[in-house]
Length: 267
Image 1 (cartoon, rainbow, N blue to C red):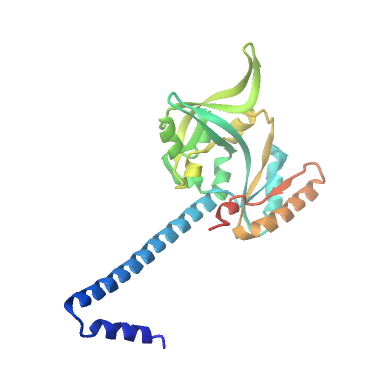
Image 2: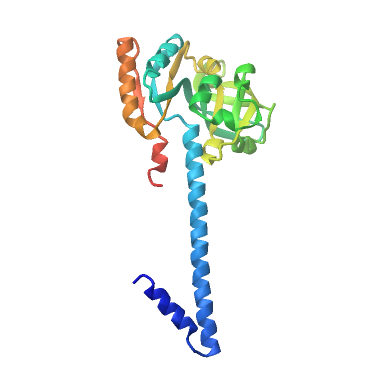
């Protein structure tokens, strides 16, 4: 039965008709075939691009986080408790803030992440996507900053250039209340391939973030990478309970699921 339409089509094409009708039929057949082939090709390319983009973004952002005011000397304990769960691959303390970054050419809003470069490498691939400079430079340079390639282009800057970073924290001066500002040296540029990240993410040393945001010896939380991303929403809540129980309310942590999942829920 499945070959009947094909048999009819072949018989029709081979039938004795005028040259003009034969040409029109053949041209129509070839046109439809080419159209279907192009559709399949474009669909395959787009699916491959979507998969590549999804994998890059998901590898660049931790699967989940537990957030709360954690003393820096408590971080090793928290990480050890988390790693008792065999489904957790790695964890890393972090500080997160919004801010502004400016050069002589432009001013842009960014997300600023204070991280330990070695530990962050275990939960994110950003450090492996460096195209200029060095990822570890945020630890080696006193005030080094690593930014995305699109952001660097928008600001008209490169490795070794100085930028002003404005933090939401304010400071009182003779001129009144002013935003807290610090000059950083661009020591690394990354390219993930996701414009939302390449133009709005910046990384600095976690110690510098503590000082500039006046957090004393605390961090905002711990980011987690699981073996299976799709288990993260359920597991992170249980892991948070385990940490809270271990510290017996000395610290209180809240779970946040992988917000990046929302970006792909429609794909």
